[in-house]
Length: 143
Image 1 (tube, rainbow, N blue to C red):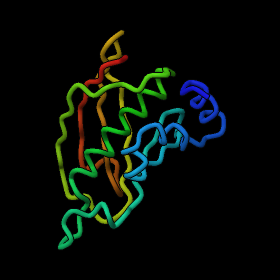
Image 2 (cartoon, rainbow, N blue to C red):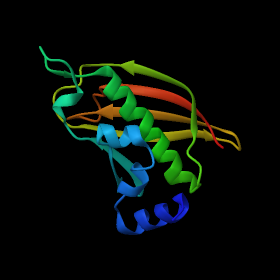
Image 3 (cartoon, helix red, strand yellow):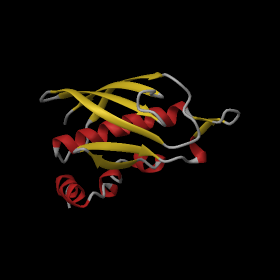
Image 4 (cartoon, rainbow, N blue to C red):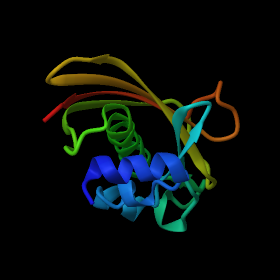
C-alpha cells in the first residue's frame, strides 16, 4: 500500500499510526496525530526519556524541536496527499517557556505551498494554547 492509500485509510479510520511509521524519528519520539475541526492535531505524550533538565524537570529542547518538525512533515503529507515525504530545507525554533514534564500539543499552519517549496508555522503548548512553549518556522522541499 502506498502513502496516498495509507493516508486515505487513516483519514477514514482516524488512525494515523501507519503514516507516522513512515518517519522513524516521529515513531521514536512517540508523536500522535489526530484530526480536530478538520485539521491535524499533534500530541507528544509525556515520556521520561524526553526530559532534558531533570532538576525542573523540563522537556529536552531537541525533543520539542523534533516534535514540531515532524508535526510539520506530517501536516504536509496530510495536506498534499503525496507519496513523497517533504525534505526539510531550514527550520527555525523559538523556545518561549520550559516544557514541563507533561504532554505537549501542536498545530501547524501552511502559510505558502508552491510547486517546489512549502512554508509552515508550528505552535506547541501544554495547558494553555495562548501560552506556547515554542513556535517554529520551516521551509520544505516538495519532491
